[in-house]
Image: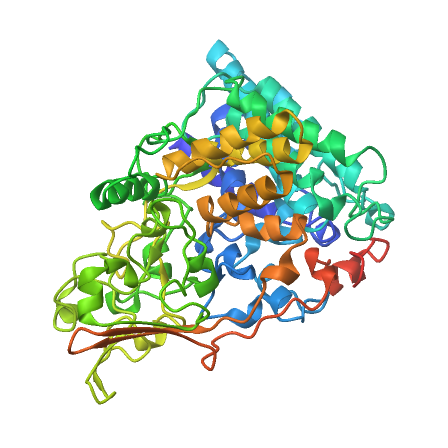
Length: 627
């Protein structure tokens, strides 16, 4: 009972400390009694640290890190948030200090919100200021103290990295704020100073963390993976003079981009060399056999890929670090109800866009070409029953690469067994995002997963697709939460980080980069890329990142750091599918049906501005350029 009371007190203190750096003056100081409670027992301190992990998501009722109802990928060209598309203000030309939409909404992107990040930094700073004084009468408790310190450094590094990659230079704080602190003297640091702080915290995390940790807690490898991610961002065009070169808040003023590419390469290589643990891709990384894989073999590869995101127990060899979702505790994962088809009583959010779907290759590694049967016609595909029987690949969803089948739910895709009320409309347990038509063009029956369907049509896809990735076929989203892991760092990212850095470094490094790239492709059942042309290799590694990490949030950072947003952001249009009673088909990309207007109005949207209220509280803080 005593331990329970102490734990409750600790959680109360945690909630008490949830204030941003500029709100702290409005709060009472933490009493010495409460601090004594939290830091009187190393196990209570560990519980306190556990809540800091939870708060990496901002609002634990709506997911942790990237696992949330409205995905970060819907701020890019990859997916469409059907319920709150206007919230993605960077795609609407409306992002401003007074209107941050998704990026300030506490329920949907808390992990990117400036004040949530600083709340957690304050919590971690409190741990780091007190951890050395926590009693540890046994050697195991002393070891736990050291580990807690390492984990705290990792969380702080992660939070400052989020500031760096989304806002630019941070207000750097390494001590907990106290009553009487002068917040009107705080300034934002340069991008370089912020990077230095992140790297220092990563080094301290690695130095204090043991060889192995309890699954779900930060390891040395997690810290090293964070280093790889941050250094790749910092080597890219956006922060190397690509935007506002003279502004130290968002661009490096010293050093060279070439040196930063080398640092990014070396950070990834250290993980690949096993410096922080042994990791490997799940699945076969050999080049496909002559003639490629059979349809059944492609499906098996797809299942392996899908399984990376459906882990519930011990993590596989590819997972470096992620967030677990037990049915007890503060972490919430409702992926099935958030993303699942409406015909299963789900909410159908974050629909893959048609241009994104077209980027998936064919199973043999050749590009998918929509107009391969009707050159020049990018909007309509047709096939008679006889043509489909002779050539199934007239169906645009047939013969595609394995990752497509592990990521996208398209018309005709298998999913879960139908609940009783769906079975009357879906005897095949296949996703229905199209309709059945009579030969005179009238509708015979509406697809149950459309916005004209018979079950929760208001949650139907707006453009013809659903997101399969992150869901669990064994979970009935209508009634149950998910327990599969959100994988934040995995080995494929390290390989592609290394590949990109090597390709950008060029010379002898380029083949090393292609070798790493080809490991990821081979695992997906695709053949090697071969080239000596740097521009071609760059195009290929960018494509591979897009597909391999689809909807995981990477495209938000990639399109910004590459400064390619104007090239990829476009309106979202509907894919209309017509299945005729005689077996003929039509797939129409209908440019007259536009569920979401999008545009890239200004390069200032590469950075998130501080809110007006934050600037009003601390007017000396430098605003992001262009706002």
